[in-house]
Length: 427
Image (tube, rainbow, N blue to C red; front, side):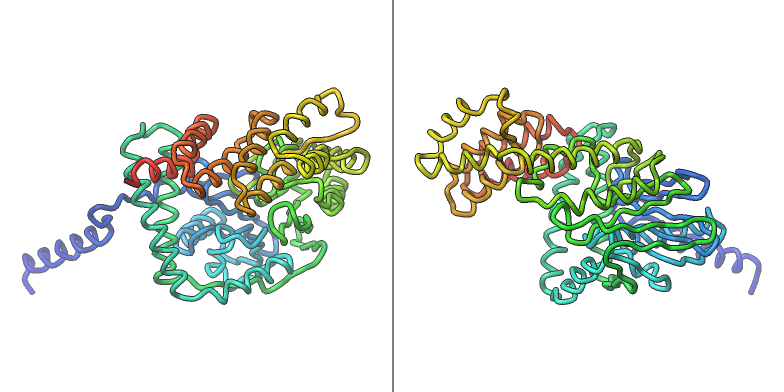
């Protein structure tokens, strides 16, 4: 072969490689959304998007690398894994720990299939149910998600690229596109191989990693908290999202606080110098918030044991009159100066509203939600419930009003932006 032919051949190969590495026309290469950093000398965080929409953690120990959660997509998690290997200069993955069973924490399990995968026994039980999901359900889910991706792309065109909402939508689009592609090609449900009931301690040579079952009824049935005392760090999965948990609409007067408090008792007893809390969607929070959360739960348990739920009294009033009359009477009889006798929790109001919604008594449900909004004006949870009911009964304008208020209170809410777009473009 002559020199010119060789040069031409080389150039053609280079062009093929370059073209193969370029994004497909119409797609944007958002791989730069992947970011990573060292939280401590031995703990490394890697994920996608500024708002921590997808994230895993890696712990560098004498006995191997320990991964905490595996992310939303095998293909994305494979990229995270490569970054970890480069940073650590090693690839001996010893354990993967799943904090709970939600898909955005376990879909990347297969990337670490050579490691032992640890989770609470209830997480394994919940994941085994996913084995029964049929191919048609997956296809329908992927189709729906791809429609959402196209909607996000249209919404993004109307936004400032420096806005929090634009960044959220861009990251969510990139994550979901990878997730859909994976479902259609490489995804394999990969189950935990080691489970525990109450707590489990991993001796990793230069540190111990402690796993505590948080208890059911707060988020999922299998949530765990991971504590690394040597690093003064805890990982809370999706349990701890923000400082204000007293108005968590998932907690009500029927909740069993004892397991939650007991698990935090153990964690704080073993590690009372917590500096950082690693949440998997809300970034790094100051360690003091775990103690605040602990105290809030104890105070709520005290109220539960020593006082009467005002919402129970409201329910009794409703039984002897109509809802609006009962609410008016309630507001008159239970002013704030009776807090020594009664407690009013958002979770109880939410449960009552949901009860009416389930019975298709939508007017009654809306009255309860208005009461909830009045008593807890900073709650975004009530707006989600309002939207659910308004959309169910076809009150589009009312749903849009609640959604726009939600977006004002949380300007980075992808969910609110997408729902607004859907409702405004249905016709």
